[in-house]
Image (tube, rainbow over all chains, first blue to last red; front, side):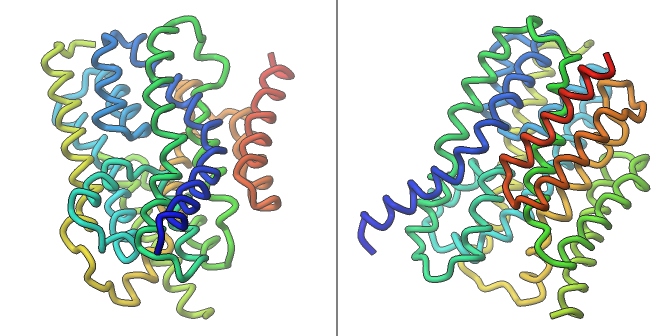
Length: 232
Length: 109
């Protein structure tokens, strides 16, 4: 494979990533605003977005710290929110596992909901991509998203209290995630999994340490796989 | 917030390292080894199993309303799902969701 096909894979990924700017910008801004209002200095707000780079868990940690939860609970809950990324990691391994370890480490750092959703859809639908093309596609998808994640966290932190929470920015996360899921409801198996996920997440919401989320996700995955096996 | 600067940095560092290790888990440890078909079959449903579970409580009991069920946010979530399902397009899905959110906020204010 030549570098030309890699380059075109990168730019195809880049174009697939572009729409998510509309999501990442308000979400990053919101985190900057909320974290600053919670009393974090700029360095720590940026520390979260650069070192953790996982919005939902950053909000979880911030929320629990605002409630003065024990440090252990803050860390365990925020990490539990991110456990889904172990499944992303597993799911991308058949496609990207052949890369040298430093590249896999870099991919791991950039493995967020958006880059996963964009890449896995491409890899599943398009067979015959080389390893290099797949990796280029993944980094391409990340390229428009990640720098803006840092930048708008910073802008949000600077803007601070100028953006009132009542204008619904808090709902950027649900809308983002729902918009990522809804177009992917391709089959009865996908719909069954999503339905199971919602019902169990609500039923198990009172479980501590985000265990409700994890249990709901695990069972929904089993339901999806089982429905696929029976309907295939 | 009663957390000291050092404690907050500790939380950030722990989350940074922990989150990286979660992301690196399979990519780093398993490498190129083939995963069996039943594992792959389950993994196909990760996104559609995890994200709704993450979102559902935020939609039904939004923090912005103190956990009270809120017509505006329910409507916005519904519009996002319906538009995403029909158009198969992330952007139209989000436009429908954000638009519905704004519309209800204006109408109900």
